[in-house]
Length: 138
Image 1 (cartoon, rainbow, N blue to C red):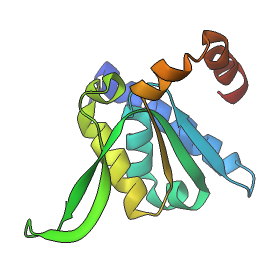
Image 2 (cartoon, rainbow, N blue to C red; image 1 turned 120 degrees about the vertical axis):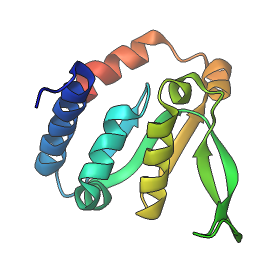
Image 3 (cartoon, rainbow, N blue to C red; image 1 turned 180 degrees about the horizontal axis):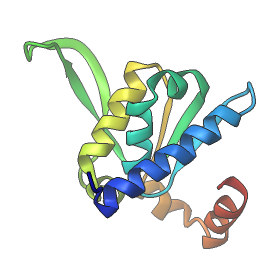
Image 4 (cartoon, rainbow, N blue to C red; image 1 turned 180 degrees about the vertical axis):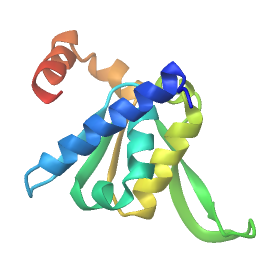
């Protein structure tokens, strides 16, 4: 069967992340996501054990809000969880993937560090920082 361009790129990015994770040192990986969560979510769903075992933390420039955790029958459990803020641009680009990544990370005790757009505006991070992250972190 023929793959669509987007499916092919998801698999390609997923393969790249898998290779990165397999070659990662024992100290693990800090996964930094500066755009939408699509590729990271596909990887995390496809390679749950590798994602759980090797991810030290996920840093996402997006935004999050607290939500009541619900049981399988829809009843509140009394716990809260992080959910992607649908108003954040990086989440809006692919909200189902952001939801999936946040859920997979929390279900597997992978720490999430979320920087909202409000933090980015308050800090006025220089473009050079993101250029350095790109050139030195992949």
